[in-house]
Length: 581
Ligand code: ADP
Image (cartoon, rainbow, N blue to C red):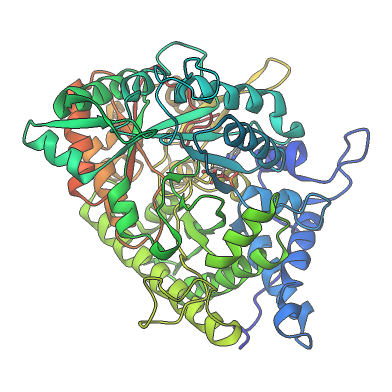
């Protein structure tokens, strides 16, 4: 069945200046001299047309123009955007449309360097890669064929890092990797400290895969075994607390490593019959099987509010948007040009998609709700609960029309509900998408209301958050002087001229306690099939026990993983969210 009627299709997409700059730099088709040869509208038309062509696979007589227009309208109104590789590559030679990949690494030189090569191919197309290095033998082990000494996971990670530097993604974007090591790998301490030196592994996020057994040992102050993956022998015993403390200490210091709760991820693995999940994509929101890829997309919640006086969430519009977006993302799988045959096969088996949201903080402001309040958590619950159930219903409807995903038998849906996609929802950081859509990123609160942007010729410009500017003008307290002060780091709550309601409404990441951040992440996780990208901000003077408390809370609250950022810590992430550029 057709999704529903058409909505207004704007002639011109309402893009802010920095959105245009981003598109010009990296997304629009260019001639040999580097001049754009398409407009943003052309770009969205190219994407809509390419993706809608998948409809013909299922129904050669369908009105494909009609569906193309629906897809185009959704994007042109900035109500939904697919992940960057889809915008960049659809209908072009590369044709690689996914943001997230996980590649397997076996304990052999051949496998390791195959993975380096495949990583290079994926980065070239704008995708990010995640790996588990847990199968590699530890650094002190003997190598069978040569009698030499093995290099161990951390040394091999350097090969991926250098390859990433070299590729630089042909002018599109710098590559990003996730490295995961199991908590019981003999090299775990080396891994935990791997990024402490400045300038190393800068293209990597690190996460320790933590098991439930390990968490229990931390709680009981017990010991656990380090096991050599090569021969299964116990390598050593460690106090769980000592390793946990080390992880927390280093995360406090530099933001790395994060942790992922790998048993929880596997307990919710939708297709356990295909094997275990060992890794996620670079920002942690998408756990995947080896060789699996996933395409993401995000609904702009700031456009899902209605009413003039008393505002409310427009659930009709949100429902239509979610259903159309699910159809769009399912279509992407069929027109995607995968970089490797194994990836094509594995991805088509599960047909995972990851629909998420952005502009959540903007939506709250529009609704008059402070991010730092019980009402915000309740809104998150209602909105994401709705996105989750609507996306599942849409996938069910697609299954009736197009059949279930091929690995349905033996999946967690088997015998319960017929689904077209093994997963439907993922909350991405939307680092670039939110700039294009002109909204707050992902589910993050605003990082700053005003900040200074460096322009290329050396001049600096003050940029004011549009919602805040409107509120300031409407409230009669707008002044250039005020904006300048805020951009220089003054806090809204210290300013006497600002009304109390405004202070409450415009809370930024720093005004929210780390526990508040975790609570918000937990609510979204509850209604997300995959995982949630969120940064838990700490003030500069936070202590190591503060960080520890939050890591433990993350486990108790059902998160699949957590990343923290302490103000002023020397984080060296391949990409960061929520921070002003
Ligand atoms: P975007 O807004 O550009 O669509 P996100 O910030 O939402 O991207 O990131 C989503 C995922 O896309 C990341 O987790 C990662 O897998 C991939 N990704 C993001 N940025 C990069 C990058 N610079 N290089 C490679 N992959 C990236």
